[in-house]
Image (cartoon, rainbow, N blue to C red; front, side):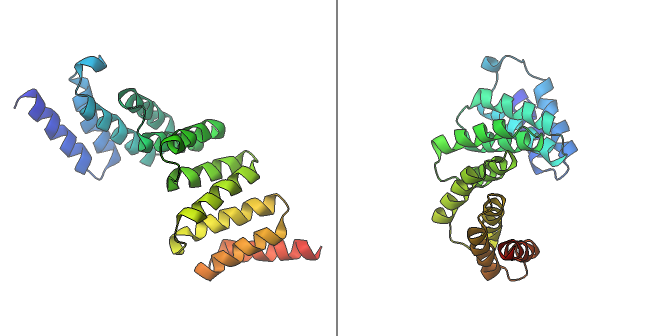
Length: 201
């Protein structure tokens, strides 16, 4: 097989493998056989390799390695929203919340209503105590999405943010919305009880 055929073979093997370690090994076969000079590489192929390798490392919980891969992918395409989002998730899992927010903002510069970026940005902001900003993210999501079971978690996160701000009436409204969507949502039930107790003093 010529070089292109070998690359295609290992890329397909990696792409279709269900084992993250196997995926990484396949992508490494391609990376090891090429120059490290990006100008001598197939830009599209190497972009996809670094993206997919980063996702595989994320599945393994190796977020530092995943971050390295996403940074490599961004050398080939600085505007790809999925890579910025995945980089944000890796940074979040490493406890680097402000840097994660920066990544989600990069996504939102290109795609202002990106659901993943808005949701994950809200979670990261809540982790650094910026609950008002987190609520803004969740509110934008509500305007963008049809609320169903998939999005009960957004109302729940919004309720938790209001609760952290001491705004119990708003928190209760959010938890009630969760229970309209998913009547057995344990977190919302507990949140509702907790907020009701705090209101009663």
